[in-house]
Structure formats: structure tokens, C-alpha cells
Image (cartoon, rainbow over all chains, first blue to last red; front, side):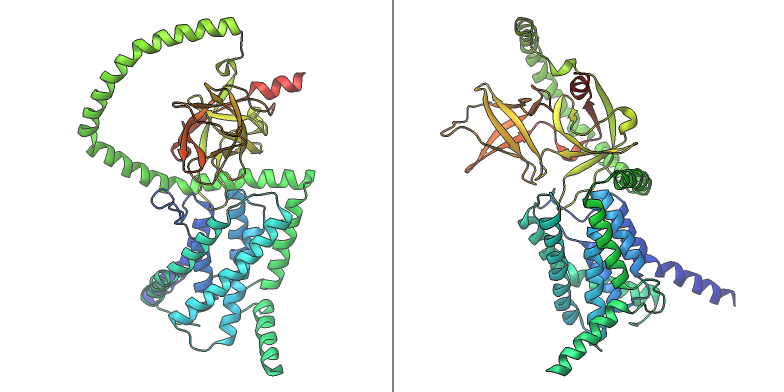
Length: 173
Length: 284
């Protein structure tokens, strides 16, 4: 009986992993920009976290958490409040849509559809910044960030899949 | 064809409105809220400014706390590395010390000469301004903005536009002020524009951030030729920054004239904010 309770408790703690990772990336100084090592290398790990977990196990990552993580991220990096929430929720929307129309997914189908999520989120970002904000940004940096986010998806797909099956012990919902 | 369109409609409606087992809010509702917050934040009002300021202060403090374990680990790592490389570093430092001692005599002469010249010109010196020291509490690199958060705000008389220096070298300026914190826009940010003067030629230019480590000089005179050992200072033409703050040295990179900053924006821990200039303007 005790071991069952203990196991359930452990599962609950580990299932908070993706949410904690999302908040950690938003609220701390930790970033996924490596310009000191390679000038153009930066990617959005938040996109990968949201897309993967919304696609595989949506109950683990709530929409409310995605929204709040976006608001916190905007405050920390100094962007207009709400913009990160919008782009994160768009990634989540594409993941939910893909989940509704597909039955069996593979790494390649996930990877390809992730490109659509990145495309729509960047379109939303560009239209909001260009039309409603005075912030100047580099299209090249934005492109590189989107490119590397797409490129690194398979790596994190394997990592998160291993975490899901080995540590959480759950299958796709 | 129409079946496909129906399928798309059903799937997208389901994705937008379905809450799922443990979801409290639908995506549609949250996207609407986010858009609302974005527009409210963009159109400046007293209420939103105050709300944002309180939120900023709170989140920055939480973020500082959340980041402290990570910083502690990187501190341990760098301390360990420092310890390992102490011997080789010591050798290099001895060589540098000998070199500096030679330079010292030359500097003493230059300081005296500079002092005499300043007295003659009765020019304003950046060193005469009163400054306030602040600690960098957040340094999150973003692909979009290059900025830092410091632990001083309106409570310490900090205002928007104030220049920020590190060891007398310009780092950036204040762009957002809260009660307990403020944001510095770094010189290498794409949104940074600073009027500067290139010495010894006395040429005026604008220093523009490129998002990379070296900002570029624009609006230089036609056929401008770079002189060796040229140094860039603030010109004070905007009436916000004081003149004569050293910024960096000139580097020519193909067609661009870039400036190698004296102060590395990635290595800042403490900075000084120059308080006087804006205060003086207010008094006037």
C-alpha cells in the first residue's frame, strides 16, 4: 500500500517536470542563446517543450501555465506584455489541431508539423511587432532562431520521449 | 472537397474550444486574453504603467531568487577553473605588471597635462557627475532585445534616459524604470542610437547597435578616413547623455565602421548610473 502511494507521489512530482521546465526557462536567466560560442546559434526551447507535450500528453501541460509562462517571459526580456503568450498559445493550438487530425504520429510527422507551428507563431510575432510596437529587430536573428528551433526538435523529441516512457512511465494520451 | 473543409473546421474548433480533462481554460479564451493584454500594454496609460511597474518589480525579484542556484553553480565552476589556472595566470600577470609599470610614468605625465588642459578649457568632466552604483540582477540574453535589469529604480532617483557606465565607460542607457528596479538598453541592441564624437578628428556620428558585440558608426562625413587609434566618446548632442564618456575604439570591418566597446556587455556585474545631468535639466 505504502509503495503504491509512494509511486503515485513520485509520478505526480515527475509529471510536473515539463511545467517546471517551462517556468524555469521563462523566469530565470537561463537562455538558449549561445552567441558567445557560435554567433548565430539561438533557439526557443519553450516552443519545443510546448509542442511536444501538447502533442503527446496535453494533460501534463495546461494552457493556463503556457499563458503565464509567456507573460513572465515578456516581463523578463522586456517585450510588450502578452506577445510571448500569444505565440506560445499558437504553438499549442497547432499541436492540438495536429493531435485532432492524426491517429499515429512518428518523429518525422511531428517534426514536419512543428515547422507549421513555428511558421504561424513567427507570422503572428512579426505582424504584432511590426504593426503595434516600436521595437526594432533583426529578421536574420529571427530566421536563425526559428531554423535552429526546428533543427533541434528531434534531439529534444528523443529526450522528452525517454523521460516520458522511462521516468513518467506513461504512453501517448 | 467540402468534407475536407468540414473536417478542418471541426478539428480547429475542437483545438480552440476544447478544454480537455485537466484544462481550466480553452485556448481561444487565453489567446483573446493575451491579445487584450498586448494592446493594453501598448497603449500607455497611468494604470497600465503602474501595473506593469509593480509586476516588473515582483517578477524581477522572483527571477533573481530562482536564478541564484544556477548562478551559484556557475560561480563554483568559474572559481574552480580560476584555481586551476592560477599558476599560468600569475606568470601572465607578472609580465603585464612590468609592462604597466613602464606605462605608469607615461600616464602620470599625461594626467598632469590633461589636468592643465581641462583647467584651460574649463570643460565639463564626466567624472564630476554624481553617480549611483547598481547591481545587475538579471542578464537574460534574448534574440530580440539586449538589455539588463538592475536593482535600483525610482526610489534611488533613477530616471529614463540616464547614462549607465562601467569603470567610466558607457554601457547603455535606462529605458524602463520601476520602483525597485530598472532596465538598461545596451549599446549593442538594435534599438540603441547614441550621438558620438570620434577623436582626435572630432568627427560627429551616430553609434547604432547591430545586435552583435560591436555597434556600428553611421552618418559619418563622406570620404571619411579612419585614423589609427581613434577613440569614440559621447558627444552629448542629444541633450540626454553627458559629453565625453568613453565608448570604444574604432574597428574597420569591410564596408562597416564598427566600434569595439571598452566595456564588454556580457561581463557586467555592477554599473554606475550618472544622475546629475537630467536633474540639472529639471532644475532649469
